[in-house]
Structure formats: C-alpha cells, structure tokens
Length: 292
Figure 1 (cartoon, one colour):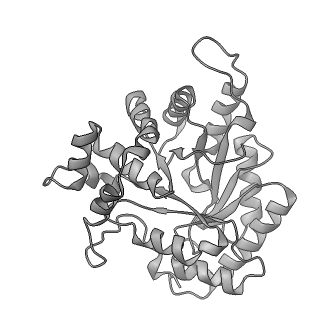
Figure 2 (cartoon, helix red, strand yellow; figure 1 turned 45 degrees about the vertical axis):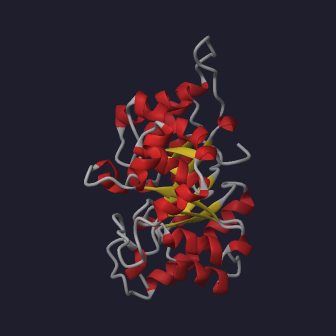
C-alpha cells in the first residue's frame, strides 16, 4: 500500500481468536492498516489470519484482499533493543510477509534497564542504524519511533548519520495530552515527520461521564459519539489514529469518524484543545520523559 490509511486497527492486548476475529471484522468493514508489535506476542496469530484472508475468494459481501492492499506496522520490542535486526526478521516470519510498511523502535530504552543508563541512547542509535539499513534493503518501507520525546528525536536529527527525514512517530494522543505531538509537528516540520496517535480514549477517561465538556457540545451538535469527536479531531490535526475493538458495531462507528473530519470547525478543535493547559495535561500511558 502506498499511503497509510487515516485509521488503523490496534491489536495491543489482543491474542488468539480475539485478534483473529477483530482483524476479520475490521478487514470486512474496510480497515486496511493493522498495527502490532513484537511485545504484543500476537504476530503469529495475525500472520495466520491474514493468510486466511488472502486465500478467501471474493463474494457478494467481502472483497478479497491481498498483501498489497494492507499497511502492516510492527515494532522492535524493548527486550530486543540489543538485536533489532533479528527482531525484525522474526516479525517478518511471524507475519508471513516479505516486508513491513512501517517498523518502529517501540520504546527509547532497553527493558529493565535504569532510565538514566547511558546504554539507552547508544542502543537507540544502533537500532536506528539497523532500521535505516533494513529500509535500504527493502525489508521495511518506512521507519520511525514510538514513545520518543522531542529530545530523543532531536538527538537523532542532530547526531545520527541517517537523520530523521520522512520518519514516523507513534505516541499517546488524546484531549488531555496532545501538546507534545503538536510540538513534534512544529519542531520537525522541515523533516516531514508524520504522527500516529494511540490511546485516543485516554485509557477510558473519555468514556467516564464526569461533567459536561466541549466534546459533549460537539457530539450533540453533530449527533455523533464522544469517541467519534475525538477521532475526527485528531485526524483534523492530520494525525493518524489507532483504534481497538473486537465489536463490529464499535469498529464501524470508529471507521465512520473519517467522514466527520470535515464537519469539525476550527472553533471545535480549539474548544477540545482548551480543555487542558500545559499544567493540567494528563499523560496516562508509558512515560518516556524520564528516559535519558
């Protein structure tokens, strides 16, 4: 696939029949980006269900898909930072594909290594070299990082022989934590960095009814859900988004957020972004800001 779809299917915490069923439903609905990672331990399941789908003939309700129709993303596990090439080859084998559309360094440090250890920076640079070489070989078509801070990315820009042009960043993004993504967009604009967000529901905070907010106002006006508002807001910002569900109805609603993007006004986006200040932002997932 030449370009990444705006909405991708996340597979974190999904294994076995759960991930296989989710992918079957998602593909039948029109999803074409599947996101996984070495540390999710589900790549073999995904590889198996994709082979099943590749070999399923088209019928009146489903169009047959090929590898070329899909965008597959995976990531180097923090446990594999000392052997990123071997990790990549293992992912390719498990997913039963000759190439990945996108391969990311999942975390800026070695698992179970102190955040302040100098080996973390050394391994980041070594892994980045391996990813660039793999791209030159054609094993991956795009490369990037996940959960890296602005400072981590700036190091690669300033000190890596490969730079950071046309790279990808995957990171936590939601109405209570979005300013770091905006900073990356602005600071690395000349490098054409692209961003995909995960945890758009803020680990469930979006679904907890505390008090009426800007998201409710927009949802009521457009007659859509709070989740659709947030997905459309992120895409309006030109950020890709990852969603996760095993429920066909939820997968349908999430994908339908694409059509809502053009209905969001600048004022809507400003209202969502005004729900927090720099001082009140809430990061709810892994926090790489302590990693040196």
